Length: 253
Ligand SMILES: *[C@@H]1O[C@H](CO)[C@@H](O)[C@H](O)[C@H]1NC(C)=O
Image (tube, rainbow, N blue to C red; front, side, top):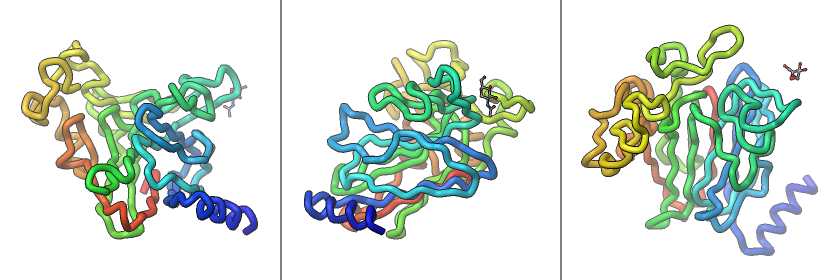
């Protein structure tokens, strides 16, 4: 109670409104959520650790700046940080730094499902999405407390993942990820690729979903997520920033 009051008194004193983010692990196993903010874009970062352990069926809530920009949260699977903590401490989603992701370089090792936010963006809208552009590693859902659209990939895309994309695998052989066609480098040149929307394919017109290998697997199972880079129509969600929506991210919804 005391710390709750202190945090709110500080927010009022600085005149900075904030949003409450809740991250709930509904998976029946431990995951290690991680958070990264692109400091080239963001004026403020959440005052919360950039990584934490989330046992099954537990949640945490924390404050995020009202104008958080280019922020992302993802989950890490099968981690052990006891020796050489770093990107390889987890089967997927690991980051430079270990449990705490480095604030400058601590993005996740793909494949990893991403929950992404830019608050108070163009038109005073919040923008948010679930992205499978860097592949999939956990089901996730973003909801608001103001009735804005749900962003989600609620299906476990691992077990039925197309063979060229399937994995990595845990010690029992279970697939804990499913790579995107770009990440798997299916067309052999990530610098000029219709799967990556790069090089001569770097516009919506030159990178249609019809040119993305296995698009239908990702989009068919997760129609409210980005299945490839230019998938705004499916994946991008907006919410009126002036209503100061709070967000809940649920893993394994
Ligand atoms: C983590 O790794 C260390 C060093 O390899 C090992 O001794 C330990 O048993 C591992 N812990 C778990 C929970 O697997």
